[in-house]
Length: 225
Image (cartoon, rainbow, N blue to C red; front, side):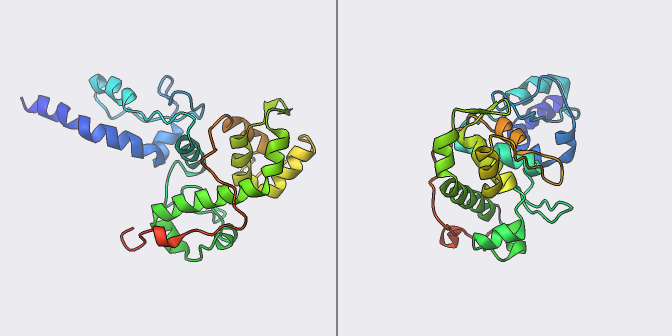
């Protein structure tokens, strides 16, 4: 009887743990064929090594299906940048789930980096604010290039915004207007072309273009973070 109780106790924990465990390096580094998130084309993987065999099917069914929504878009980028880890700081000093540099944070009105790292809600608001700024800067290029093919990749609005998150809107402008001749790779070798392909086809209409936006701290509960 105690054995049955243990098995059942996995179920409520499992749904939550699978959703939030993308930040663990072990889960991210393993490649388990057949356990990728449907329709995201991001090679999301979850370590099922420690689960009982009879729980495997339940675990797969518990994986989130975020689709091509704005939430799917930002979570996909967050997973690519840091495996969804809000506390992450890479070797070049880029911080948080979405790997922001201090310069970009300051530009968006965020000056306390420790507060930024300790406040997931602030990081989510910062991601949106930055995307809003990038969309305003690139709005003409979005209208001009969406639907065209550059370096074998169809240009989409979400691909442009993802590439701007990686390389900055200026580099994306140069890439698009040179039809891919002016390339950009970050310190890890990730290219604009890669981001254009990986993050294509998401619905980013939720992001409104705003000139020089700032993070609205009045809507963020810093004290309880």
